[in-house]
Image 1 (cartoon, helix red, strand yellow):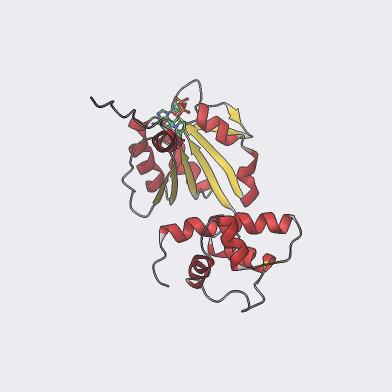
Image 2: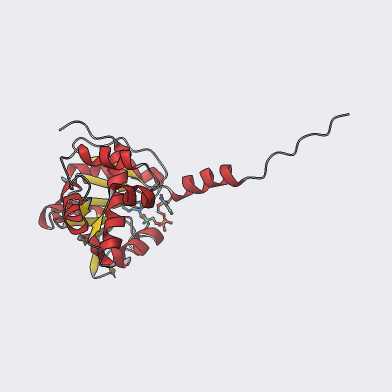
Length: 213
Ligand code: NAD
């Protein structure tokens, strides 16, 4: 299969959300034009993104919502459960642990880790917070696939390496630092403060023009 652009993968996630909303509204058929309108891209882009993965829909008749949704779930690897751990059970880690939509796509919270004596041993969202020293054992027993990294920046690289060494291949990094992916892992950064800074750039008041003369 050709190497898939990251932007295409991001758009597939958007198309899946739109298809899920259509399915919930009991709409049975859709078109690349409709998906394009909802995703704010061109219909050509939708067709091009889907064409990386084969032939979907029928010319002139569009797509079956349920079939295309199922295909996108398969392409995105969402037709199987993923076992998730949270590393760093502070404010953000706890908030993610109790977020109800985590399980909606079968992301199952199986473990949580910290190093602080006040955190280790507590139960959050039905999961006992374990010490990082137990990561390798728990990762094996719980068959962990994904780590949500919510530690302070300075602890992020080492925690990512511990996850990688324990066979956890996917890391969602919330710490505001760039992580060098450990061998065999894929790291996805999430940074809402960076989003705020971009927003600030776009909405800032224009610089006043100095009066001449
Ligand atoms: P916090 O201080 O409340 O929690 C951090 C937790 O990590 C603590 O419980 C601490 O004991 C634990 N920890 C420290 N070192 C560790 C290690 N080596 N292994 C395991 N656990 C360890 O911080 P917070 O407010 O929850 O923020 C957590 C991280 O997320 C920070 O890096 C913060 O900058 C970042 N953050 C990101 C976003 C985002 O949008 N991406 C939003 C908020 C916070």
